[in-house]
Image (cartoon, rainbow, N blue to C red; front, side, top):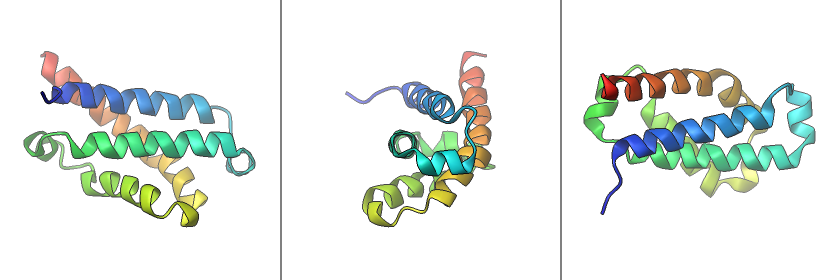
Length: 114
């Protein structure tokens, strides 16, 4: 039995919440110095990427302003290139892309209720 797509959206929000908690109050240098936080952030980015792959295409098309392929692709990069992960890219995603995704996913869930 497949899960309802809204559960994947909730998984994304949960992963975003964890990333926010792990990195709250940190700057890039602190992030670089904390391998536990790096590991936690990377794991949750992988969760987000996997969940994005399972959201139905019509729903993603309704929110075409997001780079769904790049989000899903980030997961693939993290899984397959773990020795070559660029922390500056991960940090940029955390600071600049995750907030946009959070807003969009919340809107998708709100639209479902309305």
